[in-house]
Amino acid sequence: MIEPRYSTLQSLFADRVFRIPAYQRFYSWHSKQREDLFSDITKLAKSGTDQHHFMATVVCHKTSEVKPIGASQYRLYDVVDGQQRLTTLILILKCIELQLPSDSEDRRELAKILVKRDGQLILLQTNNANEHLFNKYIRDGKLAVKGEIQTQSDRNLVRAMEECRVFVDTWDQKGGMVGLMQLLLHRLGFVVYDTEDSRIIYTLLKFLTAGVSLSTGLIRLRAS
Image (cartoon, rainbow, N blue to C red; front, side, top):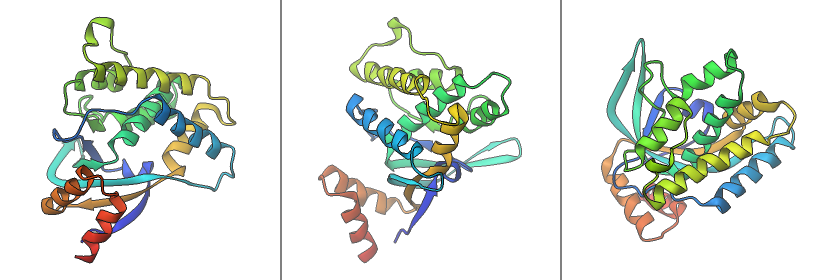
């Protein structure tokens, strides 16, 4: 049985790093899904400062792998469901980092969330053919050049980076970049399911592959 918990991005990112397993599809969101996310964020900014917005359910397999960085340790979690939204939000956070002043403490703090202090361990490891494009952007803030874009998946990922950058560049809500950073980290809510039982993961994958809603699958798992 796996029990849900409510989490913001700040707490979700605190002591873990994520990996997209090899069996997962590539990043597949298109402009419409990203525009819907941008709209939700904008609406939340215009609401009361104590309000949260429920984003999605995130299901993770808690692996036995621990990544030590200095005195810190980060548990590696495989993302079973929720990778599209997580990937897009991480891209937005990177765009915010690039917009903040280079000597800003907020920029340094955000950079530490996205790339751990060894400079190699990235918050989200994609483990697929366009991993190098994603890593290059999250580590160095550099978009892929023409010769690096080989596939439709590459083009879609780079388009996501560009659209997230435009969204952040044109953000005009009160609080500016710091306000947007705070909103994303502290006011977006997720229902998170973590499990160490690989058998549950396989069952969930069958539900997802068959098109069964994730909530239905989780209800069945809790009842079994």
